[in-house]
Image (cartoon, rainbow, N blue to C red; front, side, top):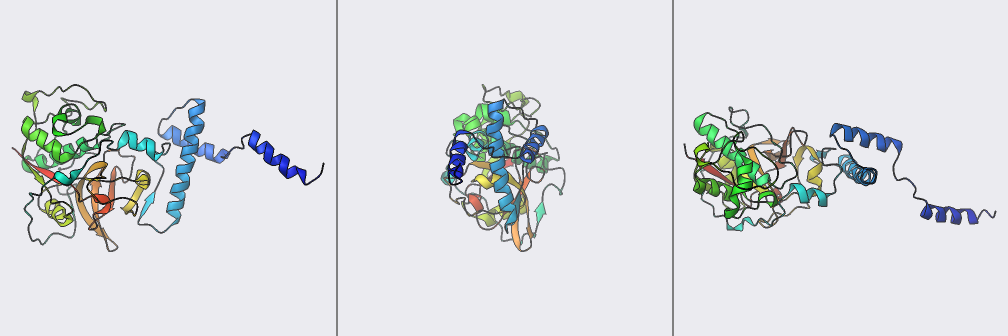
Length: 330
């Protein structure tokens, strides 16, 4: 056969027969990951998820080979595209924070160089896991409520995210599709309380409201909104009073966050793009870069045992767009 024809035949055969895009080593890594996170798929889904997993690993390796302030790693989301991740774990209803009016009364400082409410006393509950429900706003709310109540009373409670998912809809919240901590604090204030996790367990799905006033365990006296885009007011609140809830925009690289100080040039810093709510439990500085210490709600296998650091002082990803906290009624 003419040697010139061989490359043409090979090209045709490649179109007819799919050439594997992965190695045995790739499959071994994926199967190890499946075992670690207890994943099971049928044959078709296995190969689809494998392909997504390898694409994510390629992005992670490329990022980690560059010069960045944070590193990425494989985690429980590594078999998901960002589109899939957004659908299940982020706020799908637009959350425009622009209506929040600042009523935090700021001091002139000075403020400590660093603060971490986890080390000041028994004031911060363990990291929780929202599951495949866009209820991050409820975990930001309860996390803040748990802390302000503990600081005021000395008693650290576990409060009920599910009550907010099921009951806070009249305050422009949308269960597993999203909401805002400031609106959830208002619901708790006007509703006259929130129950404990034990009395109203988390289900990660929307249900009918089962609030029992006689079992309310924590209460809100007032809702404090920090002036939009004023990150120094956030510093003032965290330094002087308690952890603070905030919302920001998650973009595709954040789902792979492992450690270090997160920064991004892809996210927006405006009020209309926020899609995730979390809790600032402190702040610090490393190698000249100031950062927030933030409690997330994706379980302890993500990030730094469920926490992350994000650059402070630049309204990174809109984190200063709509921060808030409640004052407790005790």
